[in-house]
Length: 482
Image: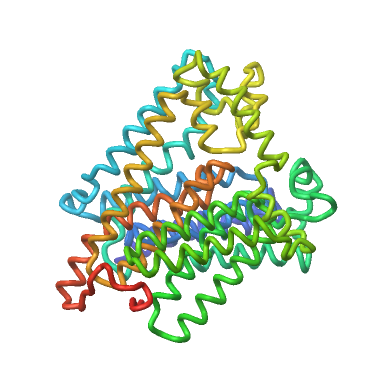
């Protein structure tokens, strides 16, 4: 006991001396750095006591990543994603038993591992793309999914954890929406204004109208807010509690308004595809007919009427159904040029050769191409071979997730999984028009949703063991309760 007190005293004196030296050398930064280090130590202790904290913390961090970079700066905040993931992996390896890791023995983890290996091999692509560009691109291309998905299988243990993840996603999407609304009606933070004053202004100020971009860019912001509209509505329809319904419908309305303010035409596809998937997954004939009529009316109003044309956001949204839209024509022309160039390059030009990281490949023709589509970007980087493997992999996972949901017996659980998968489907198909699912937070939403749907049968069995009443899967969504 005496020895412990002596060691504690020595440690305290060392910290005090370091604090004094730091305050003298760094002035105001010293207490800030010490406070951050103290928080980091406490956070690491909590993560090793419960790895779930690491995964839960990752959700708000990925949503606020852009805010930290713009408003604080001075650090590559994306690196902290890897730090959080590695820390949670290490704590999970210590915390969970060997049997708990059997959960990662499934085809989805295997498929993403294969895609990671393919992405690693792209470093020796004959096209000779920059290694630095490859190193940065592989993070969102393959590293994050291969770290997040298995971790979710191990860390998320029950429906209580599932509920926490859904609530965190809804909350962070709401905060992002409110910030986008704030940008238009109240004003910008200093970092946001600097973003508009820089290159970002070229795409976010159209005819004197600002497109809301929240913590990201307008394309990313509008697309995932559109997909989250469907998530909130599905959960609202499935709720049996009136105040839950009202709250979720109000949240959905906030998402919708923020989506319109983003002026992102690609959000149209995220919204429509997510809605179609949600209706399709109910596996109910009446819901399919009713939902089909509502969607047809919605498309008809956009395509054949001029309702709301006086409002800039609605008019820009309407242009997404115009086949003669100049932006759409430019994208098709780009794809035709790429098709000729890629015909002799079945393995593509290498990771990072185009898009944001093309600065490392200025000697390559592909670095001058703006993909404006994640699907096109995968094609250009990995060739027709890589695109085929990636697209088949994604379609297989989406298809299997649909089958899993149809087999779920518990009505509450099924609604939650429909909400997650329809949101993910919207993000995936919207990525044909924009780079969405390869950027945070959309990438995190996709990875978490896929893993949670795959875990559906496990949750379903646990709920059945608790004697929760089950309902025929073909029952109307309006009879579900959350």
